[in-house]
Image (cartoon, rainbow over all chains, first blue to last red; front, top):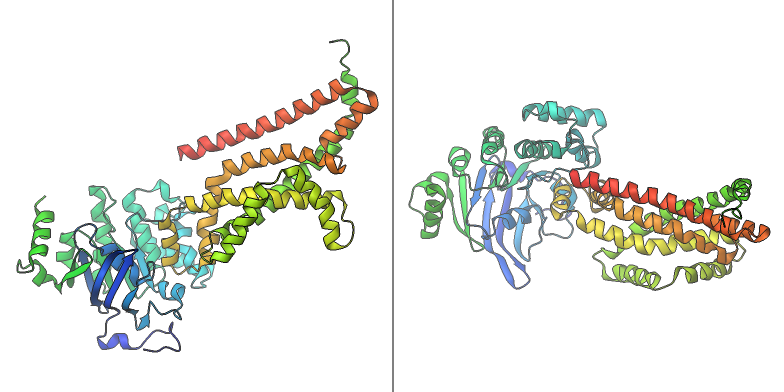
Length: 260
Length: 220
């Protein structure tokens, strides 16, 4: 790994090396271990769905990737850059990883267009016209161009989540992380968000998605990671995962969420 | 006694009272603005992950909150000229005293305000690549201010009343000017009633405004 300039994009990514690589990662909250020796990777253009019962560490797993949560042991690299390394410029690294949250987390005090513009202006250094142009393209794409001057609270949950996706995409990220993007939505709004995500996946975006939407996983995932009690129990292709031949815990989980 | 109440003296002294009121407003506004800026910096220090910084800010806040305001005013009146080596005049020493004193209170208000912003908002800013400073400036502080506006205004109303303490260093604020007229013309009843009515009306208007803001935010 290149230690002298930790923020320079690596050229390794195209050679089949993971865009995101986790090696033996462990994390504790006090005495409680939330992640236990987690190892996995996401290749360029790959869509990986992470599922598992609540409290299994899925959200934590995704938050350690861009350093929102610290971890104590192991190594994580994004595009060859070590996330845990003190010398890494985390803000710069994060600006290359889009993230979508369960509760949208749009900034309530500024308009939709400003939500999407803000980091383009302050982080990427784009000028106002350039940023607005990019934001409007993305709003058009998620079907919300007519909402650009509204405030987040004036939009439905599904609309807010689509704006949040546009906000992440505006940074032209190398990968997108989704942390239960549809869990806080009313059922009738789930599909409008999944449709946008499906489109992204089909375009070849590198994605890591924590979700219980198994239909989405079947449609677009390349791999499925199943977590239980802080451990990665299964890490296999989608077909293998849904074949019905995986471990007991995964089967139990699948039967629970597919039958209700 | 009705007949003994001289409205004329009130009207005649309006320009002189207004002059005092201007000083009262000046002190209030400077105290609020300075206190808010300094208090916000203190709040950021108190919340800083670096223990010595947060300890110093915490000590400052606890110290000033344990002092009577009148003592702080006296103290700065004598201390500031000593520190800068020349007389600075009552106005500036008192203004500094108010800013230092109010900052301790605004610090606690802003600290609560910053903590009222959900951690998810901080994550969202971080995930976009904002630095700590940018995240504070564009995401956290604007929301913290907004959440705290009613309490900040209430504190401003308290300061407006507290500026009357400047009489101890001989500054001519609204109350002092009224007092001068009252003693000169022996019209204590008239002058102190006027002062009371003016303070009451201004503070009531402020309080009503705060109430309206609170209802407005509650509805959003």
